Length: 396
Ligand code: TTP
Ligand code: MG
Ligand code: MG
Image (tube, rainbow, N blue to C red; front, side, top):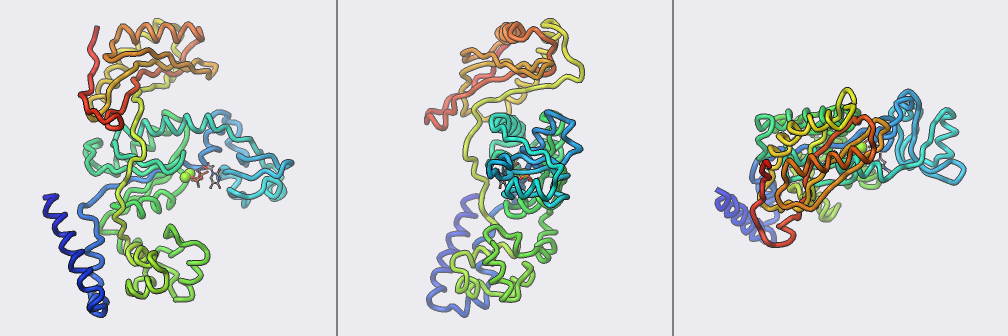
């Protein structure tokens, strides 16, 4: 099947190049050919996830008294600082990213400005990626707070991208204490627009049959790569919406916008064939649980271990066989919010060692426990270039 598709693309490209110099008018009359060539060969299911006011959300989670206040994260107003982000409360006062802190303070005198804590944001980002990896290995992070997921072949949530996105939002809220918005669509372009469409804590689902109507009304400014200058140029052309942009041929657009013209021609029709490119593969896999009531002692923690290990095993079975386990670990967060991770070298993680690691972790804090995690670290055999079977651990 894949061979047939590749051959189809190949034949179409040859045809396209033969026609190009000889008969431009032919292709002008035949724009469908251009689309046919650039059309993705299979129907994809892409989810774009983006956290809501990310840095501010993490700070509000750790200090809920900030929730009702206009809050910004950035450099101090007294030292020519700049706002990195702000919560939605502050946005109502006109505060936004990249604004000078001094200006923001003048505009909203009650604004609380906190310095960023990048270590904390990186940790939340890592935990969020672990959640994404439970649904697919095809995760392409774009920044700390956003990523594309290709869930075309995922059998989680009965294979429904809509349900996967919903479950991810629920899990991020419950396990990490922050909200995120998602866009579900057949391609990256539309999924990214979708995640921004109903922010905060929102979802947008764009089904293949809805693409045409959705994109037609979309302002050209929403197309990535269309900045102020291009938007003004397009406005002079009489194209403020994607629907209006469709009246121009691919040649008119490339003549006026260079290579980007071809992209514009596709995007204003909702076509984007870029694949999700996982830029980094997972380095660990863990299962964590925050308990509604603190676990008072080590015995109570050990009682939770079997359930955590069942979940860990089932997730390990889902990852492909190109990882080699090198370590096993236990994570513990105490009721004073201090957390600790204890790990040891291990090719075949076993329950007895998990119990020992848990005891060591508990001794470090000796306080009631609010979160427990168990996991493994990997060597990525694809990177090492020597595929080897993943070893699932056995009970001892
Ligand atoms: P964004 O996802 O662009 O913004 P956001 O998550 O704060 O808000 P939204 O709900 O609109 O998605 O960026 C993610 C983080 O990156 C943001 O929390 C802070 C940081 N950032 C900067 O440091 N400078 C900037 O100019 C922007 C836009 C973001
Ligand atoms: Mg964001
Ligand atoms: Mg973002």
